[in-house]
Amino acid sequence: MTAAIVVFPGSNCELDVEHALGLIGVDTELVWHRDTDLTGFDGVVLPGGFAHGDYLRTGAIARFSPVMAEVERMAREGRPVLGICNGFQILCEAGLLPGALIANRDLRFICRPVLVVVEQTDSILTRAATAGQVLRIPLNSYAGNYVAPTTEMLQMEADERVVLRYCDALGDTTSDNPNGSTNAVAGLTNAGGNVAGLMPHPERAAEDILGSADGKILLESFALSLNDRAAASL
Amino acid sequence: MRFRISISRKSGLADPEGVETARALTDLGYSGITAVHFGRTITIEADDGSTAATVTEMCERLLANPVIEDFTVEVLE
View 1 (cartoon, rainbow over the protein chains, first blue to last red):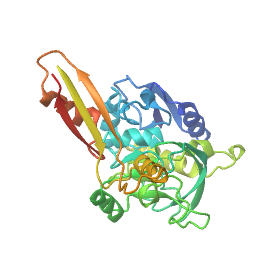
View 2: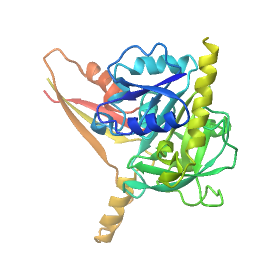
View 3: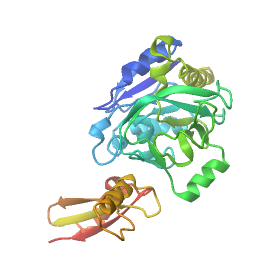
View 4: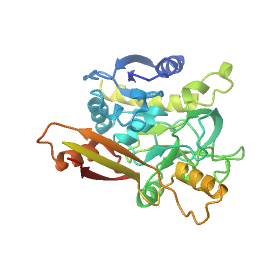
């Protein structure tokens, strides 16, 4: 199984993702955002960073990078598509995930570990985790405040597509919301469960030496989904 | 042709900059501030022949995010 990691001008987490996925046995290949053929990849990761300088809006210009047509194809085909931080913002701009990410409530760049609770496990991001599990993963963003029109938000909650929420040490999602995200959304998935985005960086919490290995369970979930796709296309 | 595009956050959605600025204005003694909304202005210069309809399409596709923003297009000259 092989995952593509898209590199936009301004991406800066692609090597961390490559390293962290490598630790759990996933082969990866970095692909440039102008590439137009991702044939042969079982899934794709849009990593964190500041694609195209975050000009206009975060993810707004990246969403039209040539490679995005292939990302959209893979999403349509049910392949695992994962957006981390800036990658999540790009997936929202592309309409592959609902809503948008705006400036943090307190207008500060947040760079520290936060707690998130696994809300549901029917996604490429959480299938190896347990509902209710609390994970400690770093957040590293200015525009991490999730918003969506009320009707869309209600629909998403009814469909149980919020997979991760910010929480306190007891898993309570009504306190310790670091950035003001609506309903404390930290990560969500599409209706098919194969496209997922999250603001915290699992690749930065994927081995004990980093202070937490909690993010590994999310990357392992992604790896399982890649494996399924690889097996299906044999 | 020149066009001026005004983009604003849809009402009802969170606007952290607006909330914080309203608070600061109130702190400065300006009473009665009920809301502050930030937006963005983009001016586009194009060859003659471009129309407001084209610029509107640009807004819908790239310049504004229809999920969270409203926009207006004004033809300047």
